[in-house]
Length: 170
Image 1 (cartoon, rainbow, N blue to C red):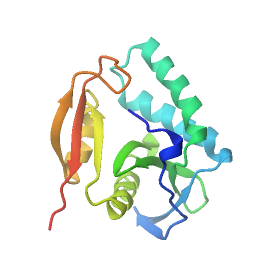
Image 2 (image 1 turned 90 degrees about the horizontal axis):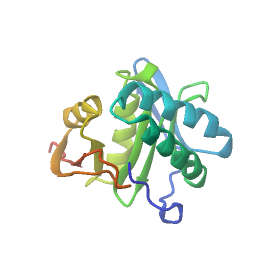
Image 3 (image 1 turned 135 degrees about the horizontal axis):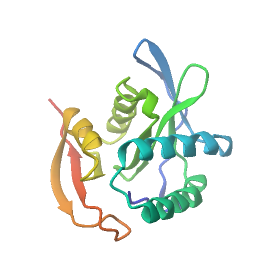
Image 4 (image 1 turned 135 degrees about the vertical axis):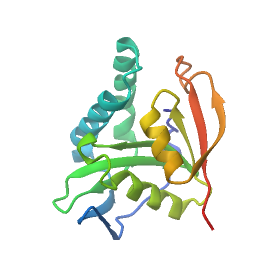
């Protein structure tokens, strides 16, 4: 995951409601009070999907994320009680981060976040770890196509990335 500088963020306001799996999601920007839940989602999601990370790299990435996330305005997908169930970070039409609580996988939270991102950026791009086959399958299933591959992640670690671009189905 390569994250852009916080100075180059795009603002997202509180949004309309979105129905998923017979429940409602509300999109809103993150606040400082959301950081513990955001980090919980990040940790649980990474633990569920990033088995390929070496333990030392996993700890280093978590330290980087813990330092960076408070500086960013993440877009949260919160349930009707206000509890975040997933989040994303967009920068200049590139989806830098998308994480969903594993308990919500398959319930439409990720799709709802992507729908919001595509509404703002029809030429949306993202990068996915090649070894994260679940995420790669998700993106391809909802309309992303492969545009390239890098042998290392954005921090130079030996985790290949697949570059993707959203292809609208007009």
